[in-house]
Length: 321
Image 1 (cartoon, rainbow, N blue to C red):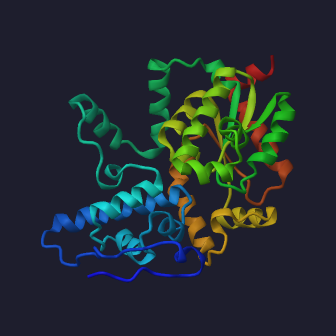
Image 2 (image 1 turned 60 degrees about the vertical axis):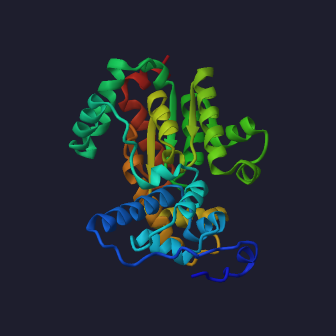
């Protein structure tokens, strides 16, 4: 059955959404339903981590919001071609939506299974042990860079500048370095290269900053945790601090800045914000330190942030030189 392309205000006039392969409701095998629910969960998680609304994903992939909703609920049996459209729009491979890579050595499988049994709270400790045993960056080079992570509105730019001034080192906004790397503004980078291209430039900019070796405070973009390679490099090369805040606090601060970005014209803005924060929370929690800025003044938050640096003996010794 073919459905007429949906024509909605503005963006739908340009898109040709085809629901010719609408979900097949009947799943004869239990494992079919299990697979569809797993795909739906992965799609919801990946979309939320990237801060992409369902409407935006619909526009970019040319797959209707109705179909995406069915897919995310586990009731949509998507075709291979439409699955590829959705994956392309998210900047990932279709395989990442369907299943984990299967070509793994026995030793890697054993290691993955062992790590999977550990509680989330122990994973940073395991990472530090492996890094200390097998990694290359020295503790001092890592301590010379303090990276602030968290959603937009957490105070990364404001507190980052103040912390850098307090420590007598440079302050860097990673988004501005991405613009330098791409030789164009962020909006143009996304328009020309898409999210995948932005992530490549973001990784290149971060690697350049680390190679330069200049002590600095780095304010990262809120979605840096969505790219496993870039976030892993950040954790290995910088002392990281998660500036945490409640969803209401994030929304209030973003509105005060007059920039709603992915939340613009979205009546479900707060629900989307909560979903993004929930999906990224376990990733942000991998930071070396956490500072909750909710209900705190800027000076109070700065005091807590400085306390984190003082609590890190290696970092404290570096900045005391």
